Image (cartoon, rainbow, N blue to C red; front, side, top):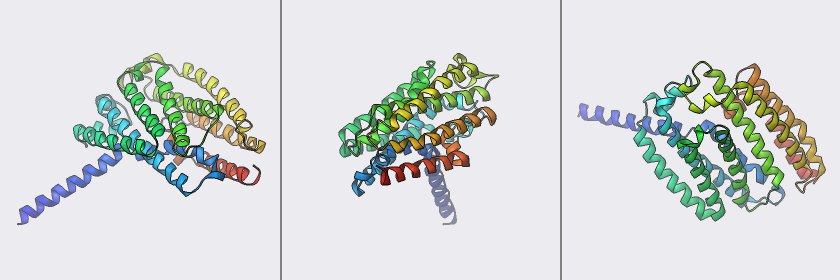
Length: 303
């Protein structure tokens, strides 16, 4: 009886550990990227009701689950290369703590459930979520090795989140909003590449083959173009969105947030994980909170 009891406890402990590793494999710390789903209700909260809020929450978690499936697939494919990375070698599959075949099976089940539920909620949202997954699969297997295209694919994921957030609550958005989102996402993607170049400058091909086609100076030039375009696009968005002109008061917060992120990239060698910067850097976090609060006040009292 004692041996049987001990064996049962060991199995229970192993199962619990596997579930915890599977949850970590979904990278919950990166779910902050999916906050973009709430951009549409933020700028249209006057017509927002409980049903729309609930739909936005559903959209948020569906993007979290599908993006988690992408991470599972990506880590499954890259597990050998990730073992040579100074940070990614600690991921569940790369470290050997999680059986990669168990992870890929769970990911497939979660993906099918998420897409089926998305189509049941809103057909166009389901299409966007499916395209998001397909594009990221193409990235994992091929496009991540194509210079410039790789960062554009990463950026497009943010655009899909923003569009999906509007579709699931049936709220329209302006072209400037989409362009601005794309440019800001390109800035984050290029900053991620710059961070990887800084970490792996001596052995760039050991982790990502595409890093051989990049240099820090080249990425900095691209970022200069993208940042300029993003600030101009956001400025145009504030007075072409159909809301009050006072939205232009939020422009300094956007500029400061971008400048602060550039400072962290160049002076503190951060930028590899935007979600980590958002949660750990008080300046960026406070800026985001103040920005959202100011948008709420302006649209509530001046629109």
